[in-house]
Length: 245
Ligand SMILES: C[S@@+](CC[C@H](N)C(=O)[O-])C[C@H]1O[C@@H](n2cnc3c(N)ncnc32)[C@H](O)[C@@H]1O
Image 1 (cartoon, rainbow, N blue to C red):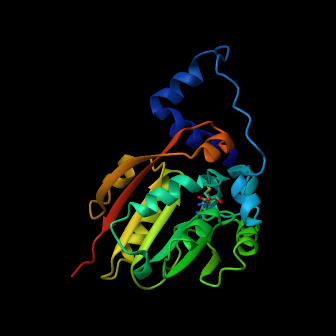
Image 2: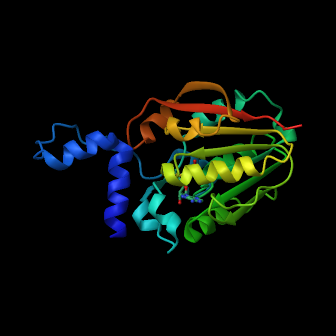
C-alpha cells in the first residue's frame, strides 16, 4: 500500500494529476526515447579528492522505516561546477554564514562549500548509511558536521544561514521543511538556495520567502560527461528570508 502511494506521488510529481490519470487509462505506447547516455562510474571529483560521492541510489533503497521515506527522491550528487557558480552568485560574504545542506547524501556539496570560506558547514541526512559515508568523506574538514536527521524537523544551527537543497524530497515533505525553516528564522538572515527546485505551488504558500533570482549554470565539460542524464545546465533559485524586526 505504501509502495502504491509512493508510486502515485512520483507519478503526480512527474506528470501532474491530469497526466497521471491519462497515463493510467491509456494503453502504454512503444518507447521512442533514446537510452540514457553512459557516464563514468566514478566522477573525477572523487578521483581528485579521494572521496566516494558518485553513484545513484533510488529513494526506495534508502528506507529508514520513517514516514519521510515516502517522499525521498534519490541520492545523486550535485555537479561541482554549477554549485561553485551558484555560491559565487550569492549576494553575501560566506565568512559570516553557516552553509546547511538539507539531504547532504555522501557530502559532495559540503566539500564544495568547504572551499568557499563558510563560517561553518552542516549536513543533514535522513539515511544513516549515506550520513556515515558523508562523515568518512569529510573527515579531514573539522568545520563540517553531519547530522542524521529528517530535514522536516531538524534544529538549525544559530546565526545567519545559507540553506541548500538539491531535489531531495517530494512536495508534501518540502512543505514541512519550509514550515520548520521559517519557524526558526528568529530574527536572523537566511538564504535558501535550491538546485532544480520545482513545486512553485508549495513556495507560493511561503510569501515571506522573497525570490532573488533564478539562474542556469552551465556544467563544465568534466561534469557534463559524468552526468547520467546528459544535462548541460542546472537551474538554481535563490530566496531570501529577511530578519524579522
Ligand atoms: C539528490 S540527493 C542530494 C545530495 C547532496 N545534497 C548533493 O548535492 O550532493 C538528495 C538526498 O536527500 C536525502 N533526503 C531525502 N529526504 C530527506 C529528509 N527528509 N531529510 C534529510 N535528508 C533527506 C536523500 O537520502 C539523498 O541523500
